[in-house]
Length: 113
Image 1: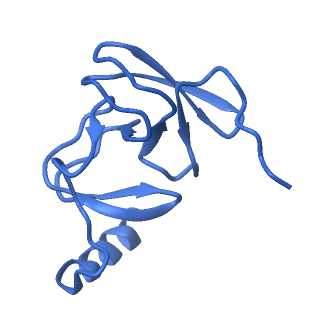
Image 2: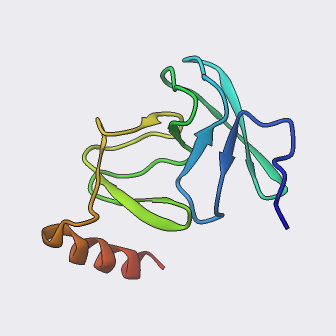
Image 3: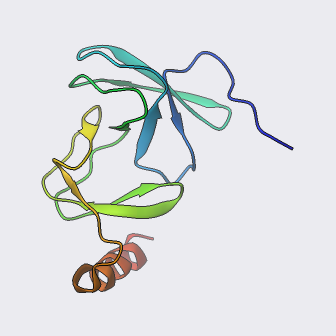
């Protein structure tokens, strides 16, 4: 059965473990953004303009830490990321296919729990 996205949110968190939400429309800098995570609503202020379909951080993430979306690690921060920042290639480096970083992300992930 397909899941419907409930109205009333500007961004969507796919998995409760995620560090980011996906913008459901273009978001303006300074805008209070409502994001939905399951049945719950959260709020974060966009610190920059964020295009439709891009990611917004819903919590602070330290430099060098994994970034989770879909409940999985999708990359690693290259600098500190504050809640409300645009999360994209300027502050996250992909680790998939990178044998030199894949092990460190797994170690970080196992220590974070």
